[in-house]
Image (cartoon, rainbow, N blue to C red; front, top):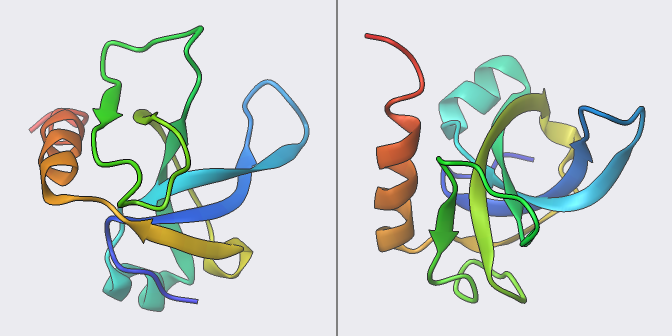
Length: 111
């Protein structure tokens, strides 16, 4: 299944400290063209975890519009996985949240 960039989806999120995965929301960062060409999807973590914070976390202000049930943040835990592992879509990130995530992710790789 192909999703547009900025879609919030549910998938088996790969935890780095466990040999398992749990169903969690994630933000689609790759384009539909990338997904069609590679059969994979590039995503970032969406979390409601209040006990930890990363300097690059982005609070998602319009979380309900994105299909999320409670306040969440985007976290720069990025990964790719086969696009057929996505379970379903929840919604789409609002424009203000897109701009905030873009500001954070644009500084990830050196120029």
